[in-house]
Image (cartoon, helix red, strand yellow):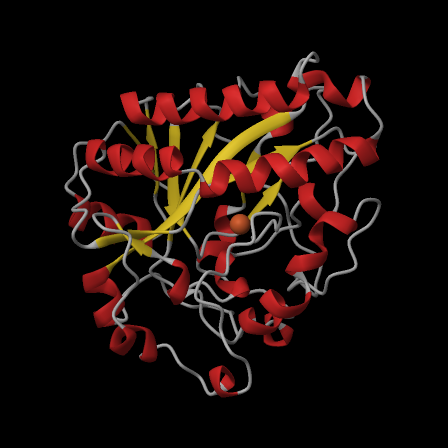
Amino acid sequence: MNLFFDSKLQDADRRKELYSGSVFVYSPSPSAFKLCEFARELTENAFHPFDPQKIHDHIPVERCVEILAELKPKFIHHPRSKELIQGLLRERGCDLEKVYFDVPRLRTAFPSDYLSAGIAYAFHPHRDTWYSAPTSQLNWWMPVYDVCPDNIMAFHPRYFSEGVVNSSHTYNYYEWNRKGRQNAAQNIKEDTRVQPRPQVPLEPDPQVRVVANVGGIMLFSAAQLHSTVPNTCGVTRFSIDFRTVHLDDVWDKAGAQNVDSKSTGTTMRDYIKGTDFSRLPEEAVELYFDGTEKEFTPSPTAASGVSERS
Ligand SMILES: [Fe+2]
């Protein structure tokens, strides 16, 4: 796996690298930092008077879930979040006429004996493509408070080009939206939603954990195998992530190699244009139809805000 730090590569060359398994890491840009500040402001108001990073020491888990169920959608759908994503993408050399993004998620990783299901789902190793993301999807991830190696996410680079037996054939994005997502906030102690998983034991090592500063960005392909690190450092992690696709690659069906994803449905209707927040052209979305769209009526605004989609 190649790691690029503060790379000057243009977006087209960067996408090629990302589709080959490279990961890009950037120092905080002004909009990225402001987005983290905004997330901190909302989070601190929601958990007042407690320190959000230590909230697991102060309130019962049920109360915490109630607060998150309000906080997360508020951040996700706030106009300021979208504005700051626009700024961030511009600062990172994206053409907003061609780059489409998904609303930003605010994620939490609590010490695992407190909460690791439902609205704070701790992700087992997976690729986002197992969750119906296209192979051209790119993931942007940044810490909202300082993080340590024991409360972030890990890449398992050997599996970028090596398929693993998995259950992604059971996952359909439209069905997931219809059934599972509404219930995310209710899955407190354990998660009962059927998720695509590896069906064979994996070698977690070698693994790569990037410890960035607040607002520092990790950019990687949706085809990377990654997981939530079990939080053993006693500090709750807050992070922001969102996804993008580039219109040229959507039309060309370009992207990373698909080594093992068999999920159905597509997340293509979730992305909004960098300039005016319009959806992808329907003819472009239709390129990703697989027949299951006839069975379910895809929601045009799938992001409920309480789901921990991959
Ligand atoms: Fe993921």
